[in-house]
Length: 247
Image 1 (cartoon, helix red, strand yellow):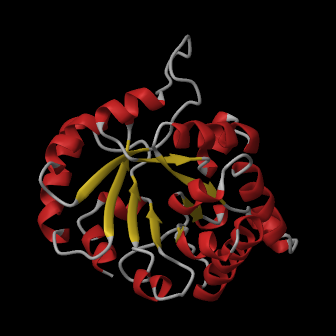
Image 2 (cartoon, rainbow, N blue to C red):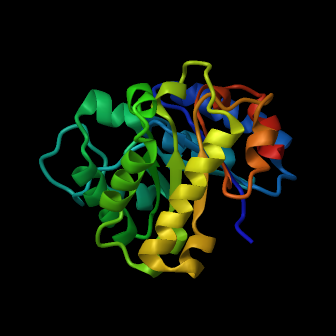
């Protein structure tokens, strides 16, 4: 059985003091959760959030990572920095990184390989624009993104990583893919993993849905056979995130 994962992506929100207070506040509300509970937070918030999460079932992850261990890369954060801080999960290839910071499928692949080499679990993001969906090429686009992101990843490594399907047109817009649309793409991703690595890996890998997930729509989404939890944006900044976790 794949363990569900409720992952929050804070994006560029929460100061260190706010992060510490919020994690401490929500920890009691999710302490009995069957799902894994994770907040991927801005780099400056990692240590204070870790301190607040100590002794609870809340895990703290990162929102991004560079593919070199160290060097003249001003403003970046390395896998060594993350592992030394105690981070296990890192979001890679989010659509906002691609759109605003010129990330490509190839750089996402480099980051995935680097993360795995350092014992980090990548949450690999994929998703299509509204134009691509209207043109009927959603699955072609998703397959391309996932295949390039996983180049050089072994079947054993793939079992432990996480793939997050986030239709770009549903991120922060209030629009949500229908349950059927979300399940169709997540099932397609699992089928692709089966093609690449075999049935055992496909059954082990966790696939999340993200895109305007909230307390009202999460239960129906998470009841689908190929959706193993959510990568949640704005709703992960509110106490209501506990309802999503417990769903």
